[in-house]
Image 1 (tube, helix red, strand yellow):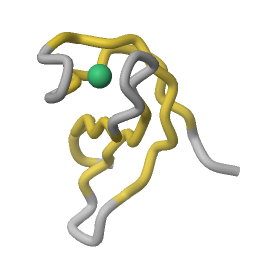
Image 2 (cartoon, helix red, strand yellow):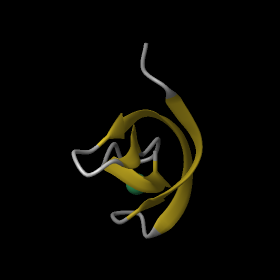
Image 3 (cartoon, helix red, strand yellow):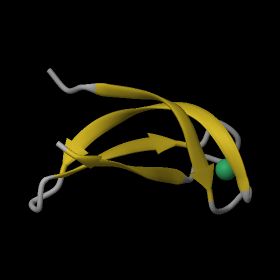
Length: 52
Ligand SMILES: [Zn+2]
């Protein structure tokens, strides 16, 4: 079961902060990232959450 992150992402296309829900993924170097989608324009959003 994937963890979910809900909160603020920065959308580079809208140049604004968006509230979204995304899946938490852990990269190879152990950094947790949230991957979501902008509710306004559909652009993929990434947010670095820090080390797991
Ligand atoms: Zn957007």
